[in-house]
Length: 238
Ligand code: F6R
Image (cartoon, rainbow, N blue to C red; front, side, top):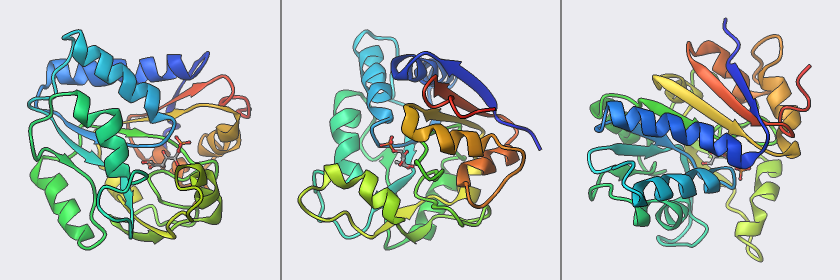
């Protein structure tokens, strides 16, 4: 088993620059690439840089396709805290994906998402964030490494971390997420970890062995996974 390659940079801006450079290189080599996308605070500077690159003519998404990792269950369509809304605000409305080529999972039919990813030829590059508890997508600790797209219950720590987006309303208790097995089928994986709140999870992900206690440790099972961490997120690595 291979430890994911670790790239440590100064801060979140530098981490997002590393990830975006990989996306741009992929789309330059393969304009029809299939991107695996993520949401969350970590992705804001990533999406901002992708939008900037598009505006200066450095990248087009016109032939690309995308599949997001996850979505909450039970929100009305257009809810501002839904991941669909986040993606529209931070990326999709500002770049040139063709209509119908960006996808988020639907809790009503998780297996259709697996079929759509397969029909697209599989994911070329999956971007990941990491939860303070080591989750990837919404695969919480204890998730099976062979898991596929499915409905899951969110850990209380995850609901607490995501509460600001919903305040004063409660965070949904359930979500639909690509499984760890689904994620591991991506041809390349770049996990971005920024800030001290991720230090313990990053250390566990790079620990001596895989453990279901830290879903991100499953990246060892991938032949070419990369973790890009800023100094704060890398602080716990021994
Ligand atoms: C989001 C996702 C989650 C986040 C993680 C970190 O689509 O799948 O795993 O990447 O919860 O969230 P932030 O970046 O907000 O700390």
